[in-house]
Length: 58
Image 1 (tube, rainbow, N blue to C red):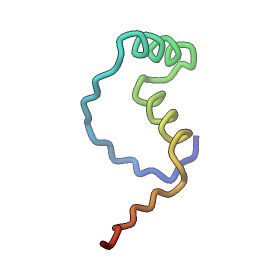
Image 2 (cartoon, rainbow, N blue to C red; image 1 turned 90 degrees about the vertical axis):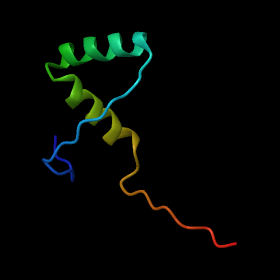
Image 3 (cartoon, helix red, strand yellow; image 1 turned 180 degrees about the horizontal axis):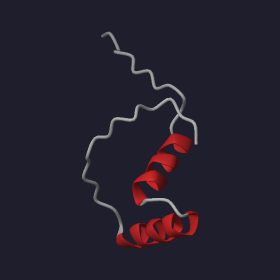
Image 4 (cartoon, rainbow, N blue to C red; image 1 turned 120 degrees about the vertical axis):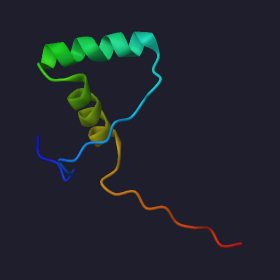
């Protein structure tokens, strides 16, 4: 998979619904990838190419 992401990694803690976590772990096994790789792949596919946050002036 080719992405514009860096090879650097950052540890995060997520609280997920146990049923989603079980399904994600199973899918990672099916795809022969780690849960980290599956999560990153899902986020890359979900997120826009670029996120722009604009400050609203009042």
